[in-house]
Length: 398
Image (tube, rainbow, N blue to C red):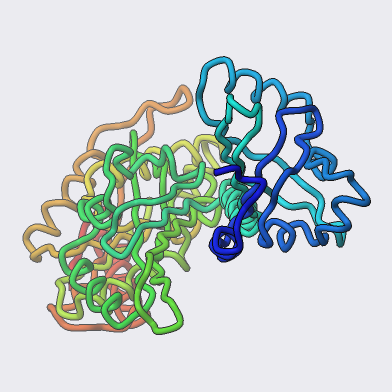
């Protein structure tokens, strides 16, 4: 069958195809010998306009570099393979169209069978997706996006090498499971089932310093029918909000953490302690503030190295530190805090001086019941006052 002398039935079939179908000469202008109706709807011109304005030269509609396209055409003929490439054309109304072209060479007639599709919408989606990805990569927070089963689909640049995430793990929930307490994991499942945001905190210590302290959110992303499609995990670095000298969290962060623990596990045993460096003003007056700062840093390192990951610390102000022990019995709490005090029995050599350091510690226990933060803090402060009044350098748990 000669394709340029089609019957009505063949034309009817080709005109029902939602793709441009053409038969073109193998010349510099890719002269159109036949094109179906859909081709003209793609470019916006009528058959008569294409003939009159462009002398049926397909290449005249192309705004990409035609010379590069002709190189691909010559290579396809030489290697006897189909053409499959993309280029840009201009619509009659001025819009730029992204075209996907596939073509097969008819050696007998030195012509091409061509099929083109307008992929502008797909290119627009791809462009917006790439733009969004670029934005997310420049957000300082760590962002991880997973599908509804937790399989990780995207990580922005800050999330690629965080200290506490396993970079080899491909599932969001498996990745965070070692970082979240079992009580929190249960709370997380409850929240996400209700399509609510779940929050938790992670900390990483090295050599007695917090090197990572994140406030994390898992945000369910839904379609209009409220079906969970994806989860977005956002981690915000809290260290800049903390204490510069010790790299410890702030008082506000400590209180928020305490409230989260109580919310997730109302009957967890909690010990809230206040540690005070004895005679700190006299140390500053005698040896100078630089030496005083070294003592505070040393104290911070000691505290961080003896506490577990779920415990929490902050510099309360001046020479005082807040300590939260989670899931300890009274005996266990006393053993941990006694280890801290034991480190002060011998003089410490700092800044060229041998200095005797001691700590007074007042601790309040919640007796496995939910107690408001300010109430437990006040009880610990009263216990510390008793220690400093009656037996400075000792420990009292109330």
